[in-house]
Length: 260
Image (cartoon, rainbow, N blue to C red; front, side, top):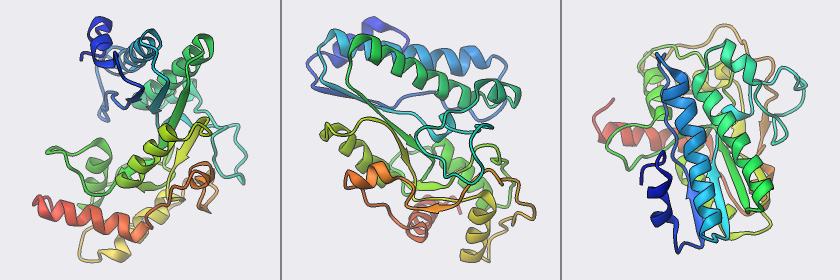
């Protein structure tokens, strides 16, 4: 299907009992026209899928949003762990030119507005940096960021980094959101809430032979650290892979592909 062509979405959705909506453009570099390249396809594509689901009588839609639709949120208390109540500040995102985050936030807001007005069953997953072994020939945006860090580059994520999660746990979470009607609302999906300084220093400790840059200054005072912060998913039976396993699984995949 072409997400920007509503007529092409209907045949794909017709006859389905449930729909998983995962597609959204991921462009982390600066763009000439972020509205056209990121925001418009994210929002219009989401609404097209939801409209087709409603028209075809689909029972439940599970949508992948992002933790970038949750932060940065200047109004959030610094000592409180980020949870599903937090929404990213759109105007701040635009000021920082974090256009991918803008697109994910606006797409999720549009989805909730549509679902409420149309009476559509919707559950949303908000994963953080998704790592682990990949089945795709090309690397995802998250894996590209991770590879840059492992090769010694500095990737600035101070405004929105919360931690990482294994791709297999994302898949497990999506199934849980579809199969369990008790799953309502948004669901933050991460192994543990941590800061960039924690993340990079752990990587440097695990792989001292690689040129990983340790962060000298912690600029994420707004992040309250926490183990098992994805309480809603844990209550649904999701069990998260620990940090070391996430990282070794990612690195094994990179080595198998000759990337490191």
